[in-house]
Image (cartoon, rainbow, N blue to C red):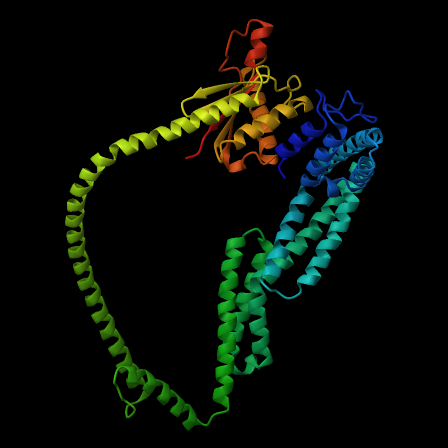
Length: 495
């Protein structure tokens, strides 16, 4: 999970200008809305953000309080449920803060964990042997990671920082071994089978070549486990040489059990089988001459095939000319039909406009005048968020803005799968560079909220920070500056 999403998570849970945690159970005045509903939302969001394993002890307490809240609600004890929910909210917010610290302090370990987990999954999906042992090693590294996150919960960040290298190294070892099994296990099986069938006796050169290829690929995995495509390519090459080794071993063993004349008869039968396809019988000739005759016949057929291909191409061009003539005649007929259909087309073309009007009016009804201004810009709809709140000079979304963003989510979903542009704007207080960076960060925070709430896929969202380049009114008065500080969400409906 990237840093920007975690910044959003802190804004979601903590709010406030300084972004600090409450030191005691929040009161009704610090939790805007139904405490039970807010508890449910924040608990679920924390699970999505991985807080359960990044801050296990504190989050476990929050979940226990959540269970007590639900029990009180089921028994009709609403006051008790609200009080317990407030305690749960306090705990989950503490867990999120601790998880944020762990996420940044242990970023290398977490990256190594994700890579190792993916590699073990690949090895398992490939049917490699020994995956259970890899999974055990992965779980063992996970236990060390849990110790690190618990230490961070207790404030022992320096100890965790000293120990994190060992855990990252453990994950890296698991990743390398898993990548080896994923890419080389099938080849290793073939080579083991060949050795069991005495490859060193019947195909020693092929065995030396396959072994060299295997060791080189194994070394490459150890040095560059991140080069997945090259590892996969080398794995396929090693598997080819391993299967070749097995085939040559079995052929050598079979020939070793045959008399010389049996081998000659075997070669004759196979050459004659090929020759029969061309009505050739050269059994009275040496094997070299039989092979030469077959090659000559095959080359002749290849030449004939090329000639047929050229003739086919000529026929294809002739057919293409006839097709173009038929298309010209068809276009004359289509022109007449187009005139008849023009009125129907005009009627049909009006439907998208009517649909855009309907969606625009539906969007306007979602917001009241103090929350947002809904504007039209051609086919696009602009949501000018008047009521969205950020701390001064910060990009953290304040909790009181969440209901407004929920309405933005609803508005976007009314357009199916639109393209969404989130624009950040500031007033002219401060330098241009600072304001452009701040406006972009605020736009990014809104984007992360919309993506996390499933309002729109990340690939459908663009962000932009304009600083104070696009004011709506004068910046010389406090009122004007307040108007210019805004977030515009531009919705471009899909086709």
